[in-house]
Length: 107
Image (tube, rainbow, N blue to C red; front, side):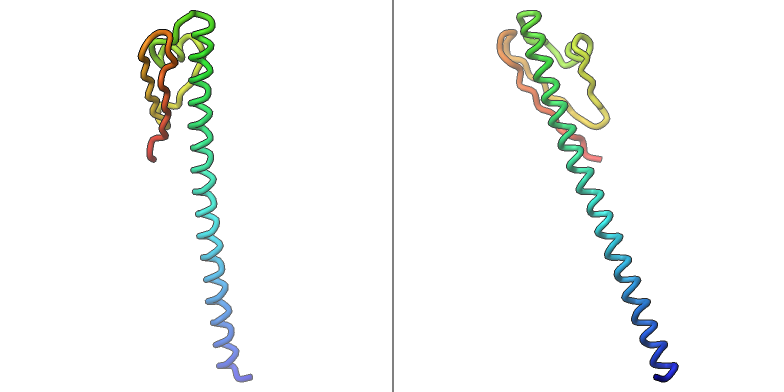
């Protein structure tokens, strides 16, 4: 094989190696984004569950549902990452379970 032919094959292999490395990098970044989304959804669900449980605990202990989310934070130890989540807490009456919705903020 001539030196020119070897150089051409060598260039093709370098190009394929670079392409494979780029594809691996894209796959890795996509996987990380997927894991981050999944963790965000799990955290959102856990926070919503914690808020509901704390509201029920308050009702069991005090006979009324808590008036605000801040009340749950102060008296029942619920911690909210306010830079990551938005909590909608609507109470209709002292003896009705509040409507609790947790949304993740966009980054």
